[in-house]
Length: 121
Image 1 (cartoon, rainbow, N blue to C red):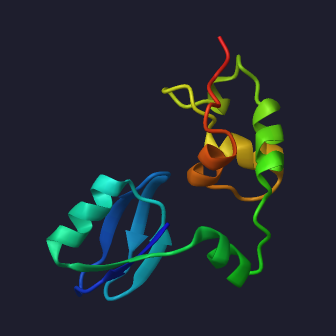
Image 2: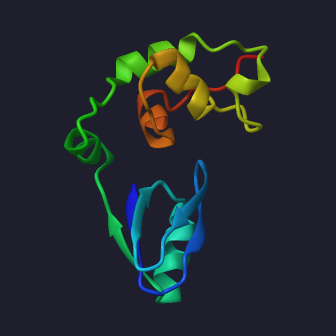
């Protein structure tokens, strides 16, 4: 998870791991980005990039961080025949895990809880 601060007077659309993230002019946003994208943002010189602990951020905002066992159990509930439950790469879809779990979850939390989770054939 990274906090990106826009050092310009123009809003920007950034590509987060879960879709487009709107970065306001002279504002900031916290989201997940790929390592290559973070390096590109750092190299552009238009942004301040800060790593943020997702669990600490969730606690600060009053949210409980789901336990790894709970995330793994939610993944086990996904339907192998439902394309909405899986990415094209066969990974559990974040929105589907969130729905099964009942609380917000990130791609990173899913990968940490069930690194081998793939769509059954």
